[in-house]
Length: 332
Image (tube, rainbow, N blue to C red; front, top):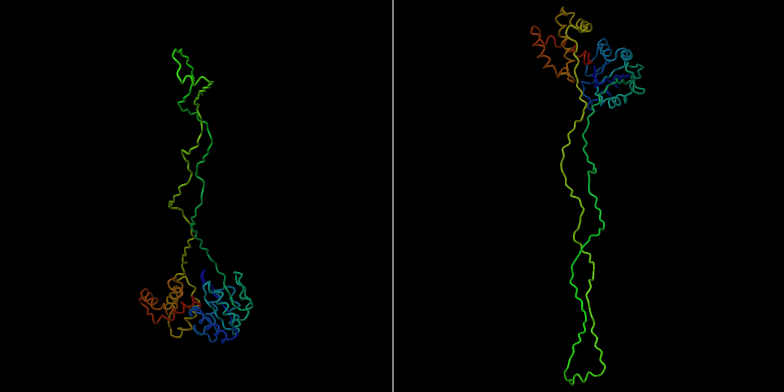
């Protein structure tokens, strides 16, 4: 009995010894014993199995494909079945392959061959729901938001300055005189030249370049922290357990057969034991008992049974409850 996250791997072996070796190898590789089911004349762990119980269990797993397994069982082969989670399938199949399982020709309704390669290992198809989660990746990029452009060119600007200029002008002044000549006058009787020059000032213009201002262009860089808010999507997978059969809705043909074989000679009535079979069957499918053995869950099963069935006793009905439980777990 598997769900979408588990598969059942089945192999058939010609000898009970080979099957035992495969089971021991599985246990050495940490496969829980309560997930390994061995069916044959010398089956271990689950005890020797009735053919009717085994065939019912196989048919509940594989439907029409059960014929090859029940045929192999009737021919004296030992069947090993392992309940495996999806991440264990390859490792478990490899272990089962090492011990020479017989070849089975069955083809499952899902299209999965009954054997892996040339072996008798059967892998049920499984389905997976991908869980997709988005992540927010925040980076940064630069972009142009403006700026300045600086030009320089020469212009003419009219200016004026005032300067005082000096100029000379020679004049000749003739004045009449009537005086006796002096010795100095007599010395100057020879030819004499007197030259007087005139000077004048004029403006002289000189241009000197001076730096009166500097225009500097640069950038001020600052940093700021900005919070980026967005939403990301993630696949959420909700698992809703399917309701199992309720009491009174279960096909009890196999229960009645087991009752007749076990209690028929005692004169007991099936109506007293029927609720116990159904209680074990329904409890094994309850999610709270998933992956638990009957022995591990017995205390809880007993408490619940005695609370809902005050007129019955656990010790009297325990074997019937266990048989109903094993019908689901594949041990009946």
